[in-house]
Image 1 (cartoon, rainbow, N blue to C red):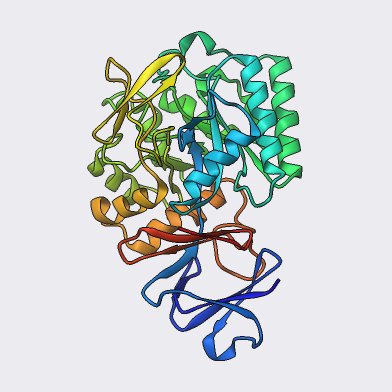
Image 2 (cartoon, rainbow, N blue to C red):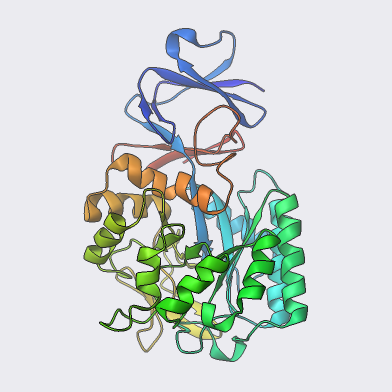
Length: 387
């Protein structure tokens, strides 16, 4: 059914338009035209005049939300439940993230994400496998006993998964430590359609740059689970700064990375190469104060999620809050902060031809934000959810 959205300003992903309407048809954006040129006779939703209609947020790293943890419940229903919770805060597309775990559970998570992807209005875009090919020296909260190096059988399964997800319009994103994976494996995975990012790594600067040359195209939560920068050991952090072709995802919660470091990253990277992620965990969207990961209790304390010994275990943030923090903590212009949450992650996944902008032909994944940057409504595939 054709529908017209009117009344709010429109941020297309490139410009803010005043006095325009958005026409939706069959789950996609049909046109964005001046109000006086709007087609007549369509069902019309009049939006608040002080609101801004923006491309829906895309979060490529979501471990859990709404009391659900994908590692604990690697099912399609769990992935869709996480997406439904995050939709209330503007995220219309996400990658449920499965961290280093048992091979059988990992396989179940991959099949679950594939099944969830087949629900076009569910908001699941594929899967992010954060591990198991990570560094034992930089595991973070990942369970060291499940860390492993790739062998032929698992590489074959991953290439098959990447191809299958790509054919279905989704993506496999993998976070790996470049020092744990040979360039030949990197090239095989990327040729199959996987998007590879360096993370949980102790790689030298030289090895990280070699991996970028082989096909790694991102750095997962730059700064975190990586060695600090030393005078003669720049490491993966400086590789993330200096590899112009690679994007860097960051958690802008005021906890994981000092704002001064993030400001320098934004100055160093070319436009479009800094991507917001939440790294969200089950308490997000709830009032819960604890959750269980690998059988360990994780505590929610003043904006932090930590183990008993103080190790960070994901983040307690949603994408709308990350956008607000970009504006308030980092002095990022609102339009750029919105791109960091929508257009740039779409590009990171190679999905920018259908997501991340409000232009004709793109999927009608939208968010309506208020002046305080809280989310009032979302649309996934043209279906509205009012909050």
